[in-house]
Amino acid sequence: MKRAVVEYVAVCDTCQRVKAEHQRLAGLLQPLKIPEWKWEKISMDFIVGLPRTQKGYNSIWVVVHRLTMVAHFIPVNTTYSGARLAELYISRIVCLHGVPKQIISDRGSQFTSRFWEQLHDLLDSKLRFSIAYHPQTDGQTERTNQILEDMLRACAIQYGTSWDKSLPYAEFSYNNSYQASLKKSPFEALYGRRCRTPLFWNQTGEKQVFGPDLIRDAE
Image 1 (cartoon, helix red, strand yellow):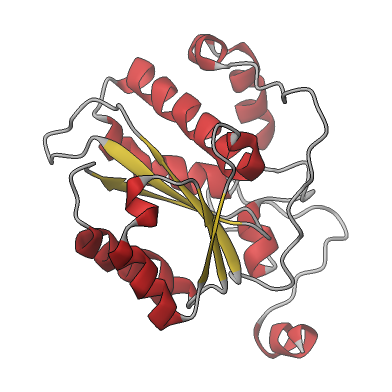
Image 2: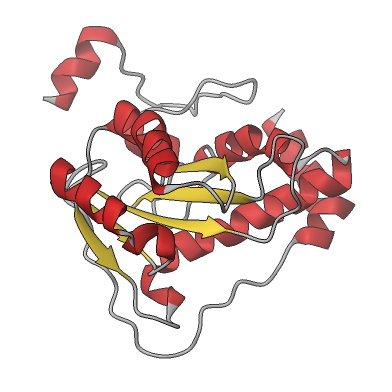
């Protein structure tokens, strides 16, 4: 099945129509330091200007774990208050992964408000901002945004559905797609194994570790 999917994507008209060139800007950039452990450092950004959905969403809150590149895509509205965003942050990020040590974002009003600053003072998370007019400072999140936009565009062309209905599937697809920099998918980088799906397969000689052996190896 994997081979059939690869061959189909290679000639898929929709895939070719939405595929964009994502060339890095020329120049010398200082990359951010690689985090030491999982979900200690994250980055976040908003994709705005989207068509308003029936549920009232018009933007996407993109949160990326910098070590494994696992991402969460949260549908929101640009009018959400700081309290509403904090509620989503706690339920969608902290409850799943714990409190990060550092958060990188741009200087959008959502991230520079007094409420947001006080919240993370209480949580003991440091806020770090990218340089104005230089979004490539947080190139990882920018790249994720580009990939997500391509995915949603493809879904709109192929299925004609509202983008918020495609968002959970886009998140699943992104987190289980091979990343050259990781040499594996974000899901596998985070959990130590591939996600079980209809496309799940075992390579010859691949070591499968389960149960007590998994705990022992992790130690």
